[in-house]
Image (cartoon, rainbow, N blue to C red; front, side, top):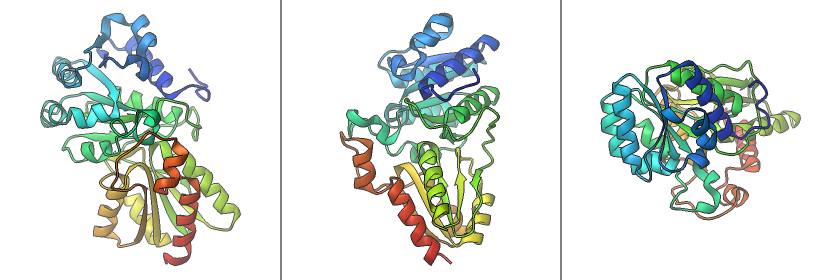
Length: 316
């Protein structure tokens, strides 16, 4: 599985999970009646039916089962919509995974505006903030299929409670098959001197495009991608902010408590800097297209570009 360019992210997830299960009998796939949405049905169901558990519409039970399996030495990957994987099962994750420090991998699918037609009840803008606040918990958001593959492999090899966002559809590749994942390190996508652009997950591909366009305009963007929001690479952020004097953050999340919150926490203590946070303001979701939500909330490519231009001229 070398060329991931044309694969949906959920297909990558299921395919890599199968590969891990081929090589490690402890890896297990847990679902809460959304296995087709996660991509594991029929991919994992057909190849590893003995290690596929469908808990039904009972997400809290799925987390409890995962914690029990982890205590017995298994490596459970528990997937469901991001709203169910964070809001609905908060207490079970807090006690049975984070507090107990069990080796459970939680996959929140269709994060943020990628829920589209499911609307406000399912459009979760808070999952990163919710899980980031838990001690012991790692929080990841891959930018593309190559980083997703590297991230899943890392998760299976590390003994660590982890939450990972998973966009279900296709995402434009920004890396290649040589890409590796280190939760302690942000990825320098482009070096620059005028403004720092910080992105994570689904928004990184858009940020790459914006940085390219601005380079043609003579705006030197330093672009940092954070596949891990917790742990958070503070050193690279502080060094970049000191160089540029202005920081723009963009995320497929609420600007409260997620990537923007992490950036403000670090820079507020270590390097006070002018910051513009782009994402969803203090509002609920709705049934709408991604473009409509980008425009309504002001965090699409044109909004990223405008914020970078502004801080490039006023940040220093």
